[in-house]
Amino acid sequence: MAASIIEPGNGLQAVNLEGLTLDARIRAAFEFIDGSSARFTAEQIRICEIPAPPFKEQERARYFASRFVELGLQDVHTDSEGNVIGFYRGRLEQPLLVLSAHLDTVFPEGTDVRVRKIGNRLCAPGIADDVSGLAALIGLIQSLNAAELKTRGTIAFVATVGEEGEGNLRGVRHLFSEGKLAGRVSAFVSFDGPGVECITHQALGSRRFRVRLEGPGGHSWGDFGVVNPVHALGRVISRISDYQVPADPRTTYNIGRIEGGESVNVIPQSASLDIDLRSASEFELLRLEEFLIAAVDQAVIDENVLRAASGVKLRSEITMIGDRPSGETPLNAPIVKTAIAASRALGVNPILNRASTDSNIPIKLGVQAITLGAGGVSSDSHRLSEWYDPTGRELGYKRALLTAIGMVGLE
Image (cartoon, rainbow, N blue to C red):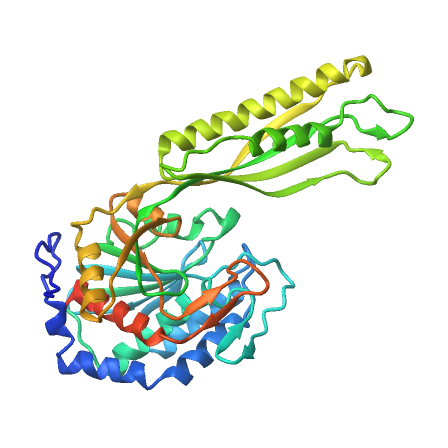
């Protein structure tokens, strides 16, 4: 099947990617990838064992800045938000393609991130999400260098901060709003996790809230009858748990954290929960958000009425702690067509899908963007038992390289 881009647009070159795989320079890069499994694995282990808890990615960022310099990228710098950026310059500044992966993990400070090998598996928190993507950035630079590839356009390699959880995509937000690349990026590719089938071109919208209830507190015996924030919080959780979400458009919710109380015999002064709302539909997301607000209001009313004799009332506060926009890079966008063509040229039948990634931000801003897996397989993402098997990783690196070259062109 022919795999070519027929509507380049925006200064992007039309490239027959099946023909590109026969180019001696690309074949040299592919040979380097095929012969570098041990090198890639060692790099992935090294990255994983540098802790990068939420909002504390600095040590891993410093490592990337040094590696970018070692590998010959130009104008390597860390921006004011903490993103690490380096340029593989082509003859021209445009098109400018960003290849990125995120530095942060979901795991708190103090988590044991040492990698254990069990057969082919590398086992450690964060080893796949997103150390596999970070390792791919290094592997791609090495492949470009090994084959001495000269590109027409320029590639910016970026290791971002704040993709996970309460990071709220802060790194990529800064990249597109205040950083040196703002207004200059032609296309954006994020490598997030393993696999080679999926091409994420649809951004899954999400909103995250912290619900906090407060009261006077007191003694469990002597002050019984006083409004209790934990009791009211339980009513909120019960109402949310009963909410019937539509299967299409897919909509989900998750209460991921609850806090409150000091002791078993103390009426708590405060209680809180963090909730994640997601939907493929902005309308359904808004409906779910409105239901949450109503559930909190009703739970507070119920507790205040039930404990009215105490003469005190609960107070509630709902704070948005995350807002990820939805959107879509059109199927006829050059980056989507190129990734599809690269997949098919390598014998991969691509699957187009939706997810929440760093690509949400450029998609919302109208910059063509996708997220790709970096090859290999994994399971237990966001768990301490997370593992990664590099089997098939070479195919992921080759697809990434072919996609990049297909977008910026060879000299």
